[in-house]
Amino acid sequence: MTRLLDTSMDGGEHEREPSDVGEIVDDADDRGDGRAMLPNRSTGKETPMHDDTNDNGRTDRRTYLKALGAGTTALAAFSGVGHAHGDGGDDEGPIPVENLALDNPLISGHEVHPVYGFSSQTARVAPPVEPDHEVQSLIRPRENVPIPEFYFEPTGLYVEPGDTVRFTMTTPHHNVVAYHPQFGFERRVPQLVPPFSGPLLPAGGYWLYTFEKPGVYEMNCAPHEYFGMVMRIVVGEASGPAAEPLPDLCATPAGGGDGGSDSGGAESDSGGGAGEGEGPELRHPEFAAYTVLSDPALDPDHIVEAGGVSWDELAAENKRLFLQPAGFPPCAE
Image 1 (tube, rainbow, N blue to C red):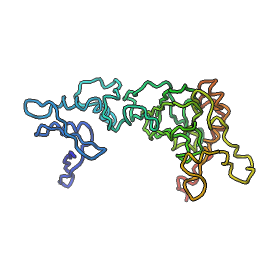
Image 2 (image 1 turned 90 degrees about the horizontal axis):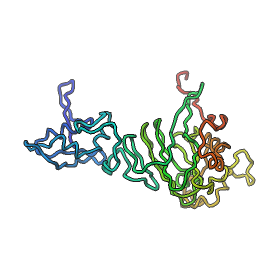
Image 3 (image 1 turned 45 degrees about the vertical axis):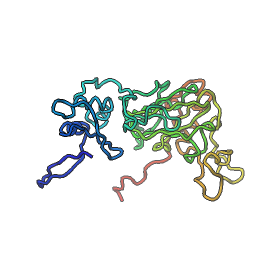
Image 4 (image 1 turned 60 degrees about the vertical axis):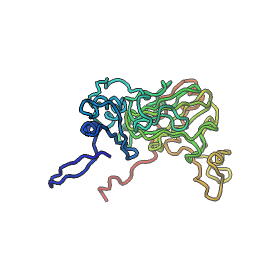
């Protein structure tokens, strides 16, 4: 891999990796063998770039940047450079996703995968398909409470089968995870729907998912589920396991159980039944996730009728915190 030399305070020289795309390009420009080497930071290998050369037999800087294409622009923006060096392009326009290499770390691919969707680390990359709806991932301070509200906006949404939803990370550190048995949850998505999820993304990134199968889908943001960051999407019709209300946690179980026996055959989705320690016990949404999804405003039939339900339409008591910091910071101990 290409390395640069730094002179330290003790007068010694130490190797370091190039810090940004600009240094990678400058280093490639200065090679005397006519071959530019592009470091691939995901594999740790170098990829030779064979391109037009100038009269001195050295790789032409502008041609090298054109070979990198819009991927260089995106990587430069991602690493804080702000724009590619000397490519003469429009730094403000969207970057067509097909212009980026499949292994570009900014994107998950060139299409919306049925399990992993499509993700981009930056809004500069144009989506592979035009989304039909947008959901924002938001954070809002609470009065006199150190933990803010984490929520999807809208929190309830109606879409048609085949519609693609864009989940925009307006704030950082969010993702989208289905309530699926293979994630340890009681099934709250239609039968035969795979355990879909998106990666944790920074602010400005986005994730696409196409909802093909009709029914009710419940999803959460994994880092903030217990704080109520969940949502319900109705695709075409209010059907499937999540069309039924969540169990009443305050009701006394008839058989002395924990109220989780109403899941029917959901255990079979995760590849096993009871006994032998074959997997964790499946659970329903908990804490604020439970109360948010139990709010009457998110009733599936109401979502179908309204088309969308805002976070602000939910009752305040259903958005309250059940988990709060205790003894932190430990200054008084």
